[in-house]
Structure formats: structure tokens, C-alpha cells
Length: 104
Image (cartoon, rainbow, N blue to C red):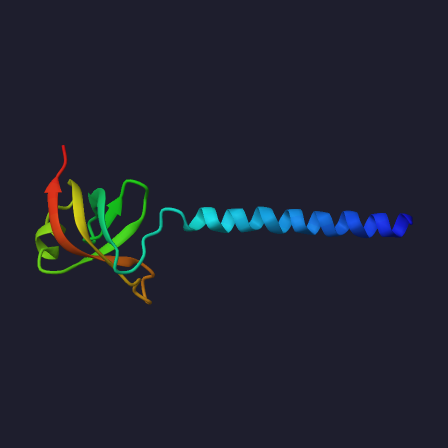
């Protein structure tokens, strides 16, 4: 009887740990953007021409307006564009810039 209680407690503990880890993984995915999704992002252009969002994510910039935006190093911008797949080499997602505006 004591062994059965120990097994039940162990199984419940494992289930509890599994439930907590599932919530942690779901929390990590929150705030991530899906490929093909149109988004509006705020942040600054880094010296290497990437958008660094206010929450610290890095996006490569593509599209016809990318060069205009990349020339605004250090400026606060709001960019609307389509999220592209992450580059395998850098691991950073890209945004195809559709429009942008300077923020004050």
C-alpha cells in the first residue's frame, strides 16, 4: 500500500512538471511572428542595417525600401512589412519593408 502511494505521488509530480514545462514553451512562442504575416514593428536601425525592435528582436530588412530604411542608422522607426523566413546562417527573421515612418 505504501509503495502504491509512492508511485501515485511520483506520477503526479511528473505530470505537474510536464504541465509547467508546456506553459514555459508556450510563453516563449508568444510574441513571435509567423512567416507571411504582415506586422508593424517599432525599433532602431543598427549599424549593420538591421531593425532592432523595442523588445530586442533583430530583423534583416528586404524589399525596395530596405536601403532607405538601412540608411537611418540609430533612428527610431515604425516599419510595416511582411515577415520572411529566418536566415539559416544568421538565424534572424527578415521583414520585407512595405512602409516606414520616423518616430519621435
